[in-house]
Length: 300
Image (cartoon, rainbow, N blue to C red; front, side, top):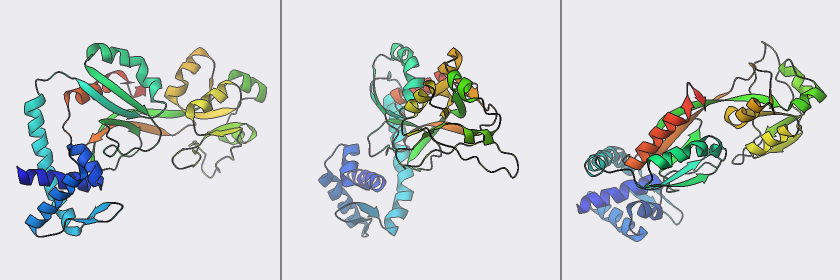
């Protein structure tokens, strides 16, 4: 058991690159983690981690040892979870990170989740920044895009798409574009990514040899909801995700512009640390998202 504890301390330190973070995951002090790893190194007769004042990193021997041992620890955790959680009802605190705009598609259906699972306490963090699932202590993260982190398990939730929209008042005043090149004569509302500072490109279908249009800016902001509200108030045309503008389109407050010329699609993922078993509260929440948020390939 002592060697198993040392192995767990090494695995968590290798994943988080921090004795403090590893201790937080295991439930012991950082000094206890450091001593456990040092004892394991002494038993093996090899250095597994390089330490400095800022972080720790794997040696080549440590990397090979980690790749062999982590699956074993995962299987042990799964076996324990199967025995200890199989008959348990979903309960406890579930910490979830979502994009800022996530409340648009999540909050309307959470009342039903609370009725089904009253003993699950939801702690929701709405944040467009890229968060470290493990270091941040999250049970689950919902994000879009490619998910290459091998430390995470992922479940595909559903797709979304982008569209161009503007207010009827703006289109009556400025005219309606018929082709992407017409956008050069219009006011455009742009979104800037907070984490990179880059302005989002508008992915449009062009004819062979056709140059992308130069898109003037009436507004650039790093909040997608603010960009949509600017379009509602007639500032110009905005390029937005479908679930942010769906209700405004249904009410007639916004209208599609250049339908069929937008080409960008995205994908939502549910992500959680690979080394953790799927607890009842996590399992039912992910199943609920899959059941209620995405129907026939569209956010509902």
